[in-house]
Image 1 (spheres, rainbow, N blue to C red):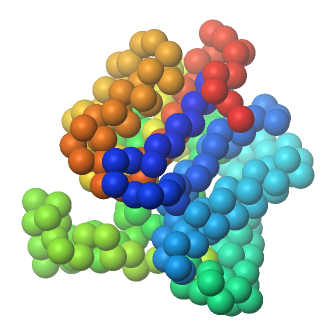
Image 2 (tube, one colour):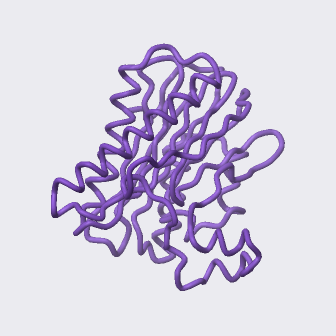
Image 3 (cartoon, rainbow, N blue to C red):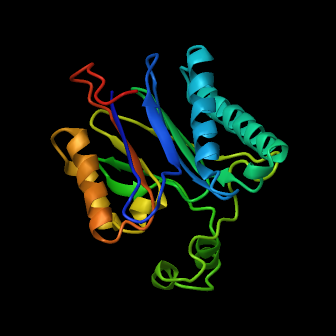
Length: 252
């Protein structure tokens, strides 16, 4: 199992509010991507807290061998991360109102379990094609889902960045969780909207047929997003089920 994580400040923002990583202290691999926001520029605090919380719980956890165990771990861990961030924001005035998206994946040689809150996404590339496996918790996605606007109108909607759900903004939030089959040569792409707002699904679908170093793939996508304006931070993680090697490329 190979993993690679990369984040970039972009061309406009004066600091990076994204965080994440690819972690493999044991046989399954955990990938995390988080996009922080709000609270007097405390978005970086929220995204880092979310990442650190999942990473620390991952190091402390026992063996995760079944989809049921992975889903339960995701629900409990994301829930506790949410409440930790909310409590911290309530106790620190400069952080009030902060929050973060989260998308995380546990990948084994049989399945991948994905959890998310917000509009950071996970895509799956396999023998059947390339598809998003998460649904944005955003205003425009809800408007599309209910037939009030088209997907084309959503791309340029003035409230495109309004989230309906974000980690750390209220107590008791839980993620959407799903488990997929994960087979040899399957790939996952986790990313923030700094990438998906600039690079379309057709371009992202190059994930399916890419052969080479994953660091080159990630750098090329970030360069493309920056060349198109780079108004936001840009972050992505790739997980590749390559059973031919045990090397952990780019794993933190």
